[in-house]
Picture 1: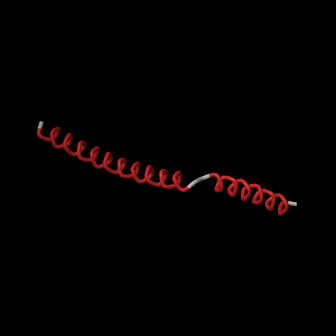
Picture 2: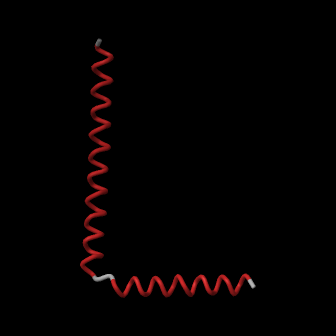
Picture 3: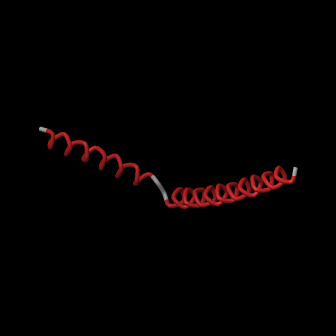
Length: 64
């Protein structure tokens, strides 16, 4: 019985994925990839900036 349920679940998921894939155009995929890349770069730059600021604050506290 559980094999039947698994088969049905995969059938439903496969159908939903195929339906979704048919409605997504290449512009949306390119836009998503560009936005993901931009978000990654911004996140990395902000983490470097925070690291730099923390080191700077630490140095200033040691001087006092």
